[in-house]
Image (tube, rainbow, N blue to C red; front, side, top):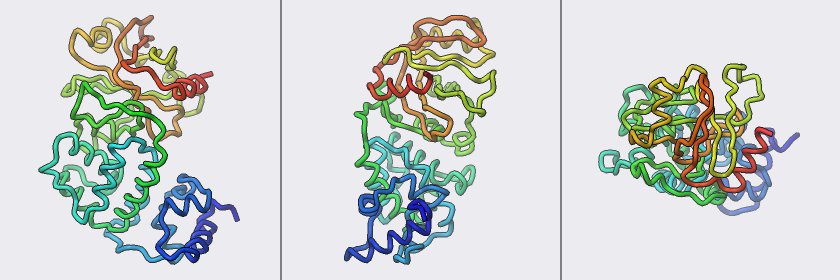
Amino acid sequence: MPATDPAARASELRRFAATIPERPTLAAFLQESGLELTDIYSGNYAWSDLLHAAGIPILAEGPQERTLRKAMGRLLHLDDNERICTYRDWARSPNPPDAASLVSRQRCLLHMLLAQILQSAQREGESLEAGAAELWKHPQVLDELGQLMDVLESRIDHIHQPLDCRPDAPLQLHARYTRPEILMALGETKVKTATSWREGVKWMPEQNADVFVFTLDKSGKRFSPTTRYRDYAVSPRIIHWESQSTTSAASPTGTRYQHHVQQGSIVLLFARLSPDDRAFWFLGPARYMSHQGERPMAIHWELEQPLPGDLFQAFGAAVA
């Protein structure tokens, strides 16, 4: 039976638990078993499910236990200290954070966390306070959240920098974010809006920001010929990006792209290697350099900060 089979994992966890005096932790079991996080969370499974299957006592279950456990796998991409440390501190507190007393940046972080975990459980129009209260009805989920943050902290592999031009937005350069997290970080508070965004471009007038998310490898069947825009890194500082197929240079959108510096708006770029990736690397703010053609416009953007060497190499391999 393969180690990634749930029954095999549970059996291995039982054997491991019998060799230690304390309750096994996610970090300790990963180190002992050699499994990856993706093995634990495959098939909508969770660490709490594995504990239960192995007959190891867990904390009290909440009213939406099944749904929230399944959501834990949506956090595996977290890779910056700010989110990881903040979420761990909150998870290990007996009470939810007082949303009313949080500064704007922390409120965004709470929105981001709830958008990931409560996607299918949070009701439209529900307040931030109500969403946090709902999550805190699930002690075992919170315990798992804290343990997962411990593991993710040990795997941070880039040096991150805050988005200086938007200090209230908890976005770190070269960290990874899902679409809902991106919008929540930039001030979107409506769950339905954040979780239903599917396009590659979004103009956020209240933030005076153009947000682009794009996939580098478009060779799969998910992309039609009309959406296989050629997006790639020319160099660590220059990104070649193609607009939507209806955008002309003289249109309001095309004009805004070309003159965003003069108009005071910002352009934020996010990229992922393939459509199977849940999250996008935040490449940071970019400045318009030049373009060729239209419908689509093939634009060269200059990044404020260069790509790390590993990301530049990975981006080049994805489109080779």
